[in-house]
Amino acid sequence: FPSHDRSGVYSYIESRGGRYDRTVFFGLQAFIKEYLLDPITQSDIDIADEILTAHGEPFNRAGWQYILDKHMGYLPVVIRAVPEGTVVPVKNVLATIENTDPEAFWLTTWLETALLRAIWYPTTVASQSWKIRQVILDALEKTGDPSLIDFKLHDFGARGTSSLESAGIGGASHLINFMGTDTITGVLYAREYYNAGVAGFSIPAAEHSTITSWGRDNEVKAYDNMLKQFAKPGSIVAVVSDSYDVYNAAEKLWGTELRQQVVDSGATVVIRPDSGDPVEVNRRLIEILGEKFGYTTNAKGFKVLNNVRLIQGDGVRIGPPSVLS
Image 1 (tube, one colour):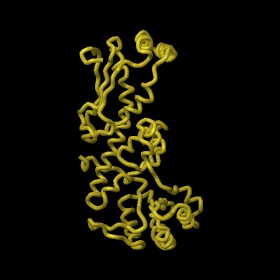
Image 2 (cartoon, helix red, strand yellow):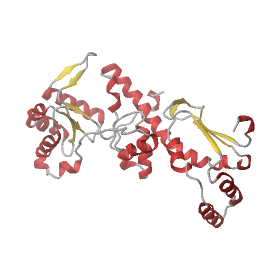
Image 3 (cartoon, rainbow, N blue to C red):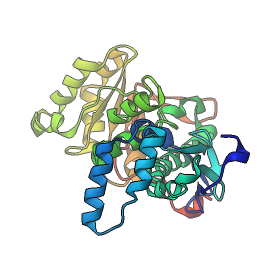
Image 4 (cartoon, one colour):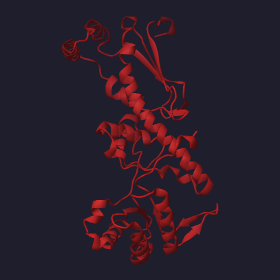
């Protein structure tokens, strides 16, 4: 429709503000592909009429019948948006919608709830993930290698979402900013709705049950099994190590009994504390592992552990708003 032929209702979506001064727009394309590309049918209209009438609300049957008869069931609206993944200052338009048939003037705001729902959650996740990326990147620029940023925040969030669909949407939103994920549903959503191929990656990793099933007396055997199964030259393997006493695991098991095996494997072993205060626990573990495995000093003057790394799996937050503005 040429612009001078359009009439009707024009609406827009924006972030009016919040914790951050910018948002990362995401989620619209997935919603459009899943819900708006297929035309409505006569059966859809009949069911909606039945339910809404019984529900006690008016149903615009004539309007929907007009869309079915005139537009073959396709919704006569045009939706525009900034490119998904764009960082947008708040109080700016993210997406707009307007009807392209004057007879369907009512349709624009009828779609408001669905569009807001489609955009709100993925944009929130993408924005939070992006902000965390800035915090980590700032630290890397001061102390380490910024090129490693893509794998510095790993998504283990599938079990904490409200549904399978939420895991897919939220997981895909995270992949705008990082490449590490165990939320396979997010990888599938990125592939299905954004033609992203394989957008997220992971490594073999132990969980508590795969350690505690060996029994406390056999804790070192559980770690040894992970090394035998997955620690190959150039590979990375993660092993949760706080099932009993993470300091003992670092000093006596990883750092003593298994030390030479770790070194000889040629792999990088990522030791995972999963409880306690992250600052206190990781600081002490770095000291223990530095004594046991040694370290190099990078170009910025900071120590880098040999053979092993740490990943914190619990109790991490981005920080108070006052340090993030």
